[in-house]
Length: 102
Image 1 (cartoon, rainbow, N blue to C red):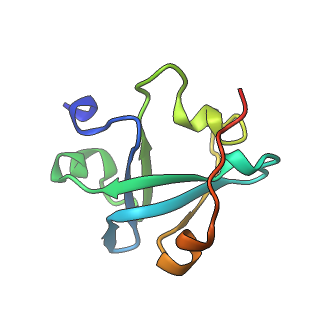
Image 2 (tube, rainbow, N blue to C red):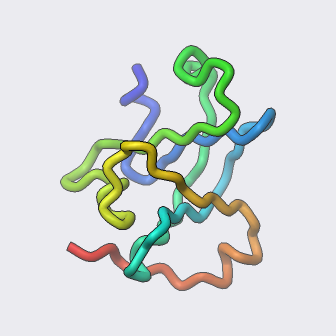
């Protein structure tokens, strides 16, 4: 069910009481390569509510594709990593996107 919602460029986000949707920048510190910043399409689907529960800050990443997206961001391994998420249009439009390192 959850995999049917996610694809390689989609991220599910919840911040505080609101759900985030639209284009967002996502970065994991410490990123050492300019390709560690990614642009995702943030969406929300009510099928995720049971997984989120009372959590105020939640992010779901897709695991589809040849390489997990989180691995492309400073070799994240989802063991408590913290991510910076920006849905500010000016900041997003001023960024130049680069490919992640191999």
